[in-house]
Amino acid sequence: MSEKELSPETLVVSAGRPPVEDDAGINSAISMNATRHAGGSIGYGRYGNENWSALEAAIGALEGGKTLVFSSGNAAISAVFSLLPIGSVITASHQGYSGVMTLLKTLEAAGRIEVRYVDVSNTVEVLDALPGTSLLWLESPTNPMLDIADLPTLINAAKKAGVGVGIDNTFATPLNQNPLSMGADIVMHSVTKFISGHSDILMGSLSTNDLALFARLEEVRKFNGAIAGPFESWLALRGLRTLAVRLERGQSSALELAKRLSVHPAVYRVHYPGLVSDPHHNLAKSFMKGFGAVFSFELHAGAKAADTLCSSSLLISNATSLGGVETLWERRRRWSGESSSVPESLIRVSVGCENIEDLWADIDQGLKRIK
Ligand SMILES: Cc1ncc(COP(=O)(O)O)c(C=O)c1O
Image 1: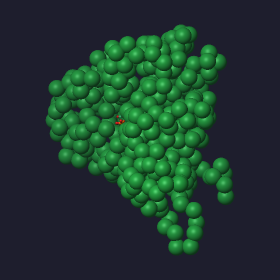
Image 2 (image 1 turned 90 degrees about the vertical axis):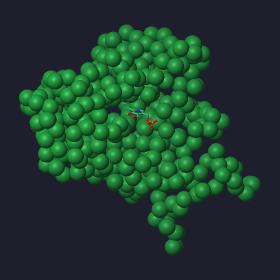
Image 3 (image 1 turned 60 degrees about the horizontal axis):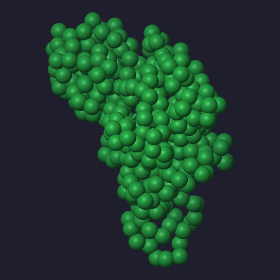
Image 4 (image 1 turned 135 degrees about the horizontal axis):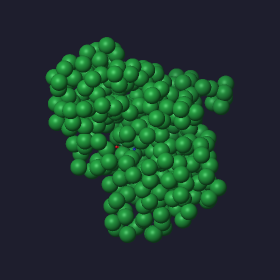
């Protein structure tokens, strides 16, 4: 069977395997080589690696584009931004992942770029910002508010206006949406999160169908040097093998917890596009295959109560990051870099693979303490 005939749930298991030969391993060996004999196509450890290639083949098959892996998600995004001529305008979310917001603000302060910050869920506002923009950089769903951008409309409009489009697909994963198939130029992942799935490595990826753009990004990786380790790449591919089952469990538990929290008296508001009552539900449903395993919620009792709740859990870890097999939560405004438009009491939850009733019991006992 050709890869094109296989479903994504199969591809996560089958893509990026070594060729079938007698006694060959079904997994790639870990290639820990900085130095190589002359005469081959790789040449040096900063230029290529068999474990990068295996992971790139798998992510590429899932996203439908040629893929490059980097040392982190932020390194991958930096590679994209580094291609923009000085003075270029980027249109981006006013409250995406805080590490990317800080990166944008640093580039702006250095006079490298100009940024138009928009509410990505306000389609008219994004469309109005497009004239004169070089790159539309969108997260959807956004971190940590779970806002949804109308990706089909925005990508289509940006392409018509000659604006490059990059989508951070970290929250959705390649199983819930594929922006390249909607016409985006670049899809980015923090591989650190759902793709690797075990909270033990940092990596990022970029996928594109534009071969000239791919070549430029590969040059940036070679010479800026933000390369992934072979062992990390091997671990990420090992983690990817279970993405479909991890995500299925995580997003069904996320929906159930979001439902229970949305009727809890201590909870002011839940943000999760999977809830029918969520303002983004219908839009998300129109182009996403699933709603993901991250949601956030606000408490009536404010920031101090949110800190108490996060530190009172017995099972859920009070820790930053997301996309692992273990459930994590944190109050996002504990970070000084988080946008001031994110509510002070907002707790982001990344739902893992534990038993749903164990998770609920942990949340419920914590909520009782803040009454
Ligand atoms: C949506 C999103 N994009 C990018 C990043 C950055 O990825 P990394 O931590 O792998 O550099 C993160 C990290 O949390 C993220 O949540």
